[in-house]
Image (cartoon, rainbow, N blue to C red):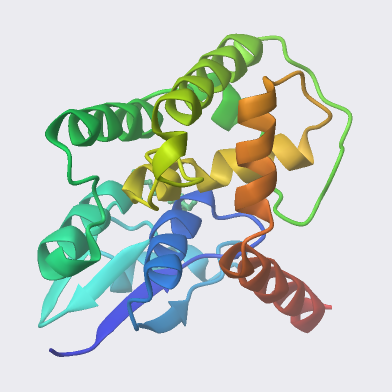
Length: 214
Ligand SMILES: N[C@@H](CCC(=O)N[C@@H](CS)C(=O)NCC(=O)O)C(=O)O
């Protein structure tokens, strides 16, 4: 199989980039990483020259460029069926797709008011402007998943899936803008994901990028 190249933005800030990077790293899919800094005077030009959408992330494979984090996840699922990136059970798979889509198309208050700052913890925060509603809904979904699928493993649908990758930036936000009132199941899920070696590796990368920029 030809090489996969994943192009991403700054690790401290680019929440959309974290999703496919975490998916590939956690699932053990080898890839070459390419980085585009998003905060430079040249960023816009570089993005418009390299990215089909003018945004990151995008995946390059076999002469094709796939943009958008969810489309990248689906492409990887097609490419690596043996990795079972969606749950095998039809009903669990439907649920996983529903909550991944809800993440992809929703929670705009949370995303706007609480930008990802991967390296920050316990920041004072507001939950106004619709943020509390988004937090409550995510808390409800994580709790429901953990109660229903815990017997198969610690991830949202037992085994690791695309749904976990889609929510990884929210896990980071729930650490940055804490402490929050979450159910025991949702808190345990947040703590488990943020402690994974792949998430730690992303954090190390974010630190190295910031140090190099000094
Ligand atoms: N729906 C897209 C959103 C991608 C996106 O908004 N990326 C941001 C970085 S996190 C970006 O490239 N921003 C650069 C810019 O707006 O100039 C996805 O899922 O990949």
